[in-house]
Length: 225
Length: 280
Picture (tube, each protein chain N blue to C red):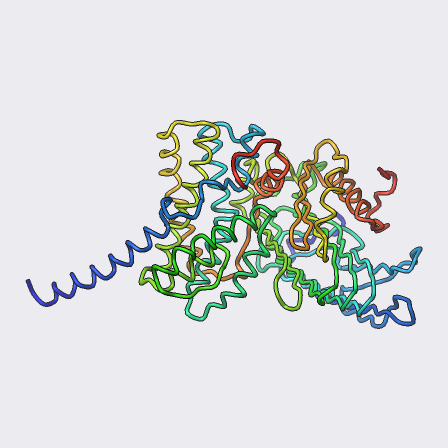
């Protein structure tokens, strides 16, 4: 064992600890209630627009790449920067909310996320919408922004795919196949969004936005958005 | 195709324009207090019934292409009310070298109200338009915005595949973003557009945003408005916002539907919209 190897091991271990924090905070088991939200997917399933594995994969992929996934990834990346104006970014996140339920979703999840993060990190972060909160919390971790975004987007994809699997319903293996198939889009978007700023936000999921708004008037609702 | 640029020209002359209008409340009336016009940017105030003036902006170049620039400014003084629109649909034509840029800046003073109801933007094949609309509200000011985008002219069998549009709009109150939307259409988006999460079978889409204290109370009235065949409408309201989105098979049912919504909100529909005849 040379000294150089020793240093390598130590560096690797430090990185691994931050990596583990990141995985923990962005895990579906982190108690922020993601499973309760479908971002309008429930409406699309009720309407029959999403009804099988292919249409679910298509819906989730488009929401990620052209909708809330991209917009939130950009806000998250901006919130990780050392000079981030978190109040401004929180205002922006709420301004870009496409419906009342979406606004509630990002605020309640942000609150729940930070309620866990504060005692873990000892940082006194004010309440923020989820994407901004995740950016601010992970700014203290030495992990690359692309990695944070990829995990975040993967979590969003898993949340929506799970909602579809439960509500269409589909088999678990169909859900896992969809999630695996989204990996290329997720990594490409994470790499792109890591270098973008709020002025690059663009979200053009007209159908998903309509569905998220019409969710408010569904007669029976399982999800909260 | 009267206004279509001749792309065979080696160097086309770029159009630049800016029109600026100020309306102020003076002696109990809304009055034009400033008007400046430059290049292809024009503004005029047609005679209207009632006291709310109508400001009609116009881009005399007839459309936006390669590197064109157009800007409209509207300043609404404290307590004033004004409705503003554009003379015709905004045509975004092919732009290959550089995006055309359009800019709309509206400032609204304390207790003032503005309706910004421009006509639809039509995206032609290879269009490349970058537009930014910014409305800055004083604490108790209100605004109603309506914006519509149509992909090509369906009657002509047009369906753009390589057009690009970034269309950002933001309403700020005392400098803080309150409502924002950023449309971003790329060739990849157009390729996927028939996905139900994007546009499905629709070719046109619009948003109507009422940003005012208590705006959410308008939601139930808008939800009760009959919806035309070929259109899908949804409404949501929260925290001083009432947002309506619609998707439609083409620009025409969409415009009639938008006019119904604008009337339901207690506004006049600008005459230049030419939707008289549907008084539902």
